Amino acid sequence: MSSFGHNLRAVLALGLPLAASHLAQLSISVTDTLMIGWYGVDELAALSLAGPWYFVMFLMGQGFGIAVMPLVASAIATEDHRQIRRVTRMGLWVSVIAGLGTMPLLIFSKPILVGLGQEEQIAQMAQDYLRVAGWSLPLLLVAMVLKSYLSALEHAQIVLWATMAGFGLNIALNYAFIFGNLGAPELGIQGAAIASLGTTALTLLVLCLYAFFHSTLRRYQIFLRLWRPDWEAFGQVLRLGLPISLTALAESGLFTASAFMMGWLGEDALAAHGIALQIAAMTFMIHIGISSAATVLIGQAWGRGDAEAMRQAARATLVLSLSLVALTIFAFLSIPDLLIGAFLDPDDPARDRLIAIGRGLLAMAALFQLADAMQVVALGFLRGVQDTRLPMIFAVISYWVIGAPACYLLGFTFGLGGVGIWLGMAIGLSFAATSMMIRFWTGPIRKMGPA
Image (cartoon, helix red, strand yellow):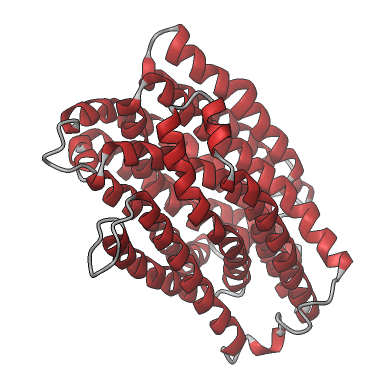
């Protein structure tokens, strides 16, 4: 029987590289926001629209890549190498189909954004960005499958290094193409899109080479006869991955809706919202890494039928996540001006206004840190036991029946503005966290035996 300390070390060993890789991935987006923020407020507002819209399309397909992780972890427990290969290959299939299928919504995004009440000029700039960056979406979804495959096999370090390589390239390409340095043309927001496309391509290349050539991974032969369909495995990935995508889409949709609502409040409010959301997302990425580690460990225990190992892994994950929550709440409340100001040109005349707006938003972000962390950790637990349908229902109710109406009522009906919109998000997240945690501790794990 594994001890709490053993599981804590296992979560740390697997979770820290994954958390760092998620942070590095987010840093690519943060770098775009930071450098575009120094380029111009209009461009920053456009990126604050384009970024969430791209992310929604990503979430529509990422569930299939995430589904590969618990399926591979469970197959590892029974040493079923053929199953590992089957679900990974079909994960690649489904992800490519999903990526190409969402491309029209990126290429022709302007009418959608204008129809949602955004200014035409800002919507046009957002579309200019998405028409270039959108081509990175199929590549990114394929990379998600490989990251899940490698993480389930506890090769998380390469996920970190591949993402870090992409991060370095992103900075260089942003510097060149946004501002017109190093002999490159000055392309503004389209330059940031070119950087994102190049970054994703490099990350995927590194992961593919590692998965193909690493000595301990050759036995799985995931690229062998890649062109051949395996409809049974295709169905497994689809059935498990679709609810994951819809769950993530429900949550992200709430954040995207909040961006649209902030746009109704004006350009300054939208720009401040984009900055505050990037800051909050940085800590959230660490929780995603910890949650992914829990999915692998609980998935392996689920494959062995070891309920006590599942409980110990869950408890260790909760300790790490709650410790981080305490630290981030302190940072958001104690140094908000420093955090927000880092994204703005010191000479920008709108700087003081944006910092003042962002200060209140970060206070609300501190409020929902606990709920946000607990809901993503609970999702990691449930994915480990391949329980994805009921969490999807919980997410839809929490974010759209409760959260989105709360954002509108508090922000506009009760006149709290941006702070009210963020408070509404906190309410939705709290309902999601509570329902999903109850599901894990009273659902599949209890059926396996007493604690």
